[in-house]
Image (cartoon, rainbow, N blue to C red; front, side, top):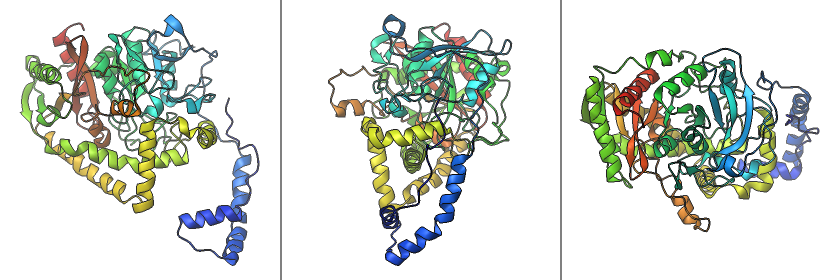
Length: 512
């Protein structure tokens, strides 16, 4: 198990460290200044050494487990398993008999947690994320860790250090990411449900490209405690399954306040009996087909046509369907990116994407491992992560957090634009991804090709990570053998209504 101890006392800052720190703070220190501040910091060093000697409690590990193993060959033919295990939960509960896969940026004690990256090779988690404990408390069985994209920085499924995750519907194509392994394991029946993470669409995009169901809940409804973050304002964990009903059941189990361990959460945002509500239908609800979600750059006509037809079919359920306009949707991705880029750099600098939850619980073993690994293995980051981090570093040096702060202010304007649409509509509909799955590039593909297939599909999904609304993908059918996903988005806190619409459409569509 990873220790949260530093392995030695904290030393006093050296002259060279103080000079570097002073330069970063635009301070000009002479010899006398250096001596003065070094002496003044003595008490602070003592405090840090006192902290080093204390024990900080990890999240609880309540259920016994073996070590598990990494499957190979025919046991992992789509490259979707990072680790297999069998952790049995309680003898009774809502998930008895359900096999649940966990995305590999979510901590499961005693199991590797690689976050899709070779940088984490050798790291073993020492605690169970809150959602893992909740699954086990409800009688579910955790059957392993699902491969995710490298640092979760891809909507494709071609960047993980372990190799591409192949789409079971056609292995030449991607499953979508970054919860790529979760989708493939659901499609092949190797798990009944999975928990993915979504910071730009990473639950919904693989659901769209693979043909399963996935919901990004209202921001803060599901605790992120014990999962690897990208940026706390867009971090979400969400259920993936083969049906809206199973997503509703899993959401019912993992949602709810985490006793202050995750500052993303609002105590007033309570879980609901989603599995009981999902079948209530959507008669009389008003469905808005968002024009700006169609015909975007990269759109495929068959995707637009399939989703448009599916949306109008919701009239057969008794819903009222109309086309609407949300002009700001076309600017939403820019706001989401700029609003999160500085926080992404802070996550990287402070604790890394393997641990930490803003001001809540911090998985110390993960943070310690990451801080050591990044000094010698940063080259193993994917090009997209390097691009974002380098850009963020330059922007911070030039402007501080001005542009990130301005974009965060604009997030409120964006949220208000969607909320204005919700004044006349109960649900918004558009394609989840504007294109079907990309073909997996060959091993010798250029860096430009690999990175070009990484984030070109997030235009409709990412805005709702920033705006916080619940949003799910449900398959409309196949086109040329590949799935098409319809995205259904609801008001803040109305995850139950979104799930009802997904279930109603599935009933219309029939088996898929």
